Each structure stands twice: as C-alpha cells, then as structure tokens.
Image (cartoon, one colour):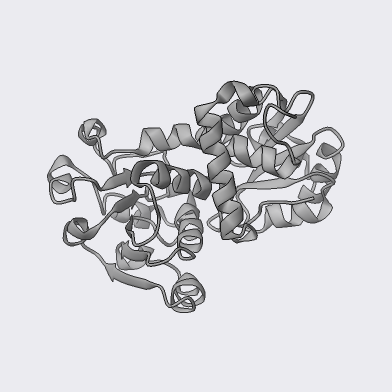
Length: 308
C-alpha cells in the first residue's frame, strides 16, 4: 500500500509515469470511465477548499467511482474532539482511498500511520501540497514540453506557500532547472528549503524583491497569493498583500512563450486583464488538476485502463 504525503515520496520515473497516464486520460477519457467502479474516495477536508476538493471528487466520478466525506471540520466529529487518528481508522473502514486536507503540518503523515487504505495529502498547513505539484508539472509539460533547463520564477508568499515548497522539491530533481525567488523579505523562502533542497542539491537560484527585473528571464512565472489565513497579525497581512500585482504592462516584459501559473484562488495578485493573454495558463492548470488526480487515484489503487 502506497501513500502520497510528500512529492518526494515519488521517484522521478514515478512522477513521469503519473503524468503520462494523465495525458492518456486526456487523450482517451472513455478508456478510463469505469476503472473505479464500486470504489469509494473519502474527501476529508478539515480546511476550506474549492478546486482541490472538487477536482478530487470530479476525478473519482469520471473514473466511475463514488465519493463520501466532509468539506469542513465543523461538519465532522473533529468538532466533538475526535482525533485525526480515530477519524482515519473509522473512515478507512468505509472507503478505498482517502484525500485529506488539514491545517496542521504533519496531520496526513499521522493519518497514514493509522489508515488501512492509501492516504493522499491534499495540503497540510504551510508544509506540502503534492497533488497541486503534480498538477503544476502536468501543466508545464503540456504547455512547454519539458522541464529540463527551465527558469522558474516563484512570486509572492514563499514562506507559507506549501505549493511553492512542493514544486521546488519536485523540479529540483530535473536537470538544469533554475529558480528565481521573488518576494518581500518577510515572505522569503524558509531557510530549511534553501539549505536542504536548493543548496544541498547545488540547484541554481537567485532571490529578488523585483518582479519587473525577473520577468525577462523566466520560462514559467508561478504567482501565489499572500495567504491571510497563515498570518497571526492582520496588520502584517494588510501591509504585504499587494506586494506583487501582475498586469499586462508587466507581461509585456516577459518572453513570448513564458507561461503564468497560479494554484488559485487569486485575490488581486493577477489582474483580470491578464486572463486573455495566451500565456496565462492558470485556468488550464485547474483543469489539469482533475486529470492528474485521476491518474494518481488509479496509481495508488493499482488500476489500469480499459483492459481492467
């Protein structure tokens, strides 16, 4: 039995296989329409979500399976004080696979130690978001063709951004990738990410506070919102929330084939005027999330396509 708690739980060949399966699903969806018949996915979301939860549910339905679960902690027995361990023990009696989001770092890891079925980390605090990373990788692959040699700009909340942390971990394993870390000092990438991933892997990276200066060299710009829910001090959030706003004027500085990604939701860090730019890939990225989660569910359940 396999779990997916951290993107590094998957080897590079395993990631490539999941992405290839997702592309096969996109190309021939009918071949996968009944793969999960009589299988059940439990979505345990102790923290609000729209895209991740609904894309997991859509993925399971499109595979012919069923979904159960809850969308907030208040609608579960967690509101009565039930522990994560006990919740998982119970739910794994009813479901074949579990997608779990939790505000506390490490909660999905605890769950995986108690579960009788595969656990997928659908985001734990500011730590990891491996299925978003698979979504990001599929999008980059479909938009640009390859990962090797890309210069990836990560902009905004690099301190609390679990999507950023996971993407750096994944892409640092591909040859020649360079990162440009764009943030105010208060939201810089945590030191452990720089030391344990970038420095330890001898990965090229630069840090800057200027989006405009970074734009011309980027192949991918990964925008993130400043996350109000991660701040203890509202004054700090209000001061930093508009640090970077992507506009058509800034897009004019970028390469003609650069792509803009965003894990969403956005607040105002990308103006709606950018949406019509063909380089804006974030809505295509959201759709890719459904397909990559279909591929992941199949992989963890040991299922294949039509011949199954």
